[in-house]
Length: 483
Image 1 (cartoon, rainbow, N blue to C red):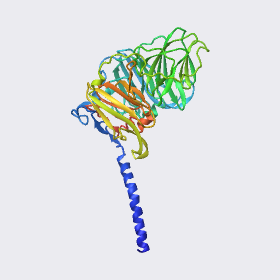
Image 2: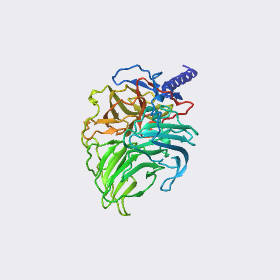
Image 3: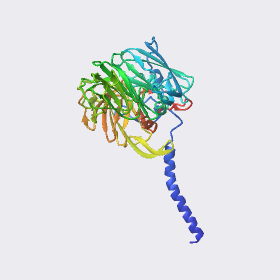
Image 4: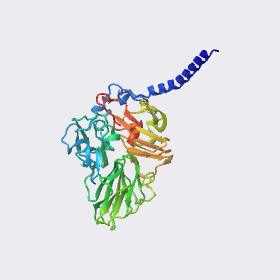
């Protein structure tokens, strides 16, 4: 063989090897691309959980998400306008933040409603460039009021406004935040708290948030004082607005965990352990203020509850944690999880590959990368069981919109305490939870990790009712980016 032929053969072999490597990579790159304009109703593949397929009308026709509204008529009992701005602002403790405000502050104003109130909130976008929405985290509002850009509404552009109307039909501690580019906007301060209950003596609200690495409670760093007389029964409503689990608790006296995620705990008992509060979750702690005061501890931030400069202890939280699997006393449920109409798996994993053309290590759901993830389909009235397992190497606070679920078991161990209702559940690495809920709120609902960067990296899917459609689109002219 001549040298020229030998060189040609070598080049052909090299070309073949190169094509053998690049062709699969090119295929993986191309198939990972997310459309620039798509409907959440059309994403992924349908999973009926062993139940009937139904009419499968969600692609076209059926009931529109836009029609699943709160009360359209009636004078609101509570009428609030919130103006969103992107600006530099000062925290209550004085530090300067370049982020987002509602009515000039972060956290935004506390919204206080009474049980049964018709609530009307008008969101005005003064200058948030990517647009904004308001999602009522933990309040099971009608679907059109859920505030998810591209799914239940269009993001509110600069100069625009959007009106939310819903009935405050469940007392509890909740919060609201943008669900447009939420991993950035929530982190930057576009959130606030909402409480459905009359204000009572001894009530303390503690919204925990980290701004530019500074842990705060209600926008203040360090330790702050709340004057409460000894003998006062204090109810401390703690909201974790950050992206990671946080150990919180009262020190200086035993306390009770009286509510979790807006649901009362049945027959709580005194504890001195720390409470593991998932990202997005809420817990209500109750204790009688002792003569020496007490303190709410949340990492580097704290609230001293008592009277006088020395009226609270300075000890650290104990290593022990409250376990809601056994805490409190069992009580009957309003439905029977053993008679489930749908049984779903939500397996969280991670693998290398491309997402929208970008190489990386991406989250998976049931072995699939976004947007080729399961669409969990249900019908109104279904009893639904879901097994959530996590082998991804990191913990994930999983948040289902529009519903509260009951925790049935963890790692095969059945729950025996008070009914453990959640809207945000911390699923640790190598953990498996069984949950159940009643499909009683028709719509198209996000089901995602509330470590919001994880959602933006693909750990997000939907629960959808058969016969429901949405007129909204992700991307496109409205620039909707729900995560």
